[in-house]
Length: 301
Image (cartoon, rainbow, N blue to C red; front, top):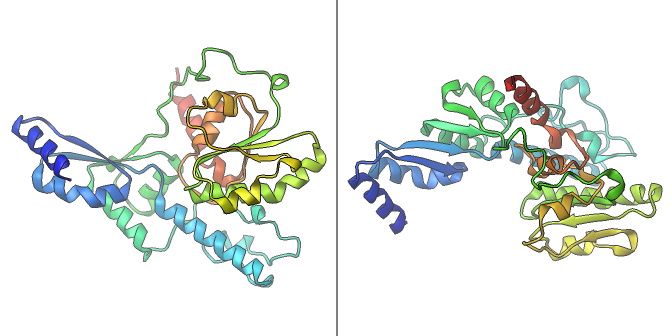
C-alpha cells in the first residue's frame, strides 16, 4: 500500500493524467477510495473479467439441484430463477445434471450482497470493460447501467491470427485423444472435471483406445484420487508451467468442457479454436462466443 500511494504522489507531482485499471470489482472496492482521496482527477476503469455475482448465483442453483437429487427429492421442481416456468419438470430416476443447464442468463436476486457490491463498483468507475456480450446486455438492459459506462472488451485477439504458432494446425489424423484444461482454484473447472469423471466411462465404452488428458494447476489430492485413473484412460497430469499451449491443445482431437456454471467467456474454448481443436461444451461454456463471432464478422469489411 505504501508503494501504491508513493506512485500516486509521483504522478500528481508531475501533473500527469492518471488512468487506473482495476482488476475485478473487489480490487476496485479495496483501492478506489485511496485513488479518490489522493488522485481525485484519475479516471477509473474496471475490468470485470466476468460477472462474478452471476457465476456465484449459477453455482448456488447447481448445488441446490444436486442436493435435491442426492436427498431423493425427485418430486421437487427447480428453483424459480433456474429456467422458464414452461420448462419446469420433475426430476426423473435417470437424472443427468447436464440436462439441467440454464438456457439463458438467469440473474441473482436484487438483495444479493455480492451483486450489490459488484454493481456499486461499476457505478463508481468511469468505464467498465465487460468480456461477454451477454453480460453487457444484462447490465445495460436489466440493471440499467448507462451504456456510456460499459465497453465490450471480449478478448484482445487478432482476427487474422488463426493460431499462435507459425505452423498450421495439425490435421485431425495427426491428433489423438481428448483434453481438458483449467485451473482448479476455479470451481467451475473442478465441477467440470467431476462431470468428466462421471461421463468418461460411457465415452470410453464407445472408444476403448481413447484417453482423456486433464491439465491444470492446483488440483487437490481428493480430485486427483477421483479423476486420475490411467487404466481407464483418464490422466490428470502434474502441472508444468512451461508446457506450451500448442502441446496441450494442438495435439488433441477434441476439447471436452462440460461446464455447468460460470460466467464470462471461456479462455480454454478460445484457445482450442486458435489451434483448430474442436470443442464439445455446454450452453454455459459457449455463452457469448457466438454473439462475439457475429459482431466481429459485422465489423469486418
